[in-house]
Image 1: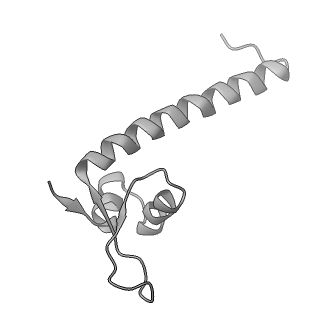
Image 2: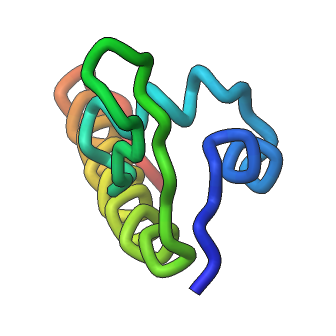
Length: 81
């Protein structure tokens, strides 16, 4: 199984590497820190399978966000057709 760097994942999703690191820190994207010492900055690596988990979490998050927007619209009197 191939280990991916944040740079690889960023290119795949067309986002900045910092965005990928944010996903990792917020535990949306599973990753392993491969640094040799805690004095170094984190060196994250992701398994290709981790991207599948991330996709599932991201899809669920999107559905939740859409549901919240729908509810907010209904509360303000907007009727969704």
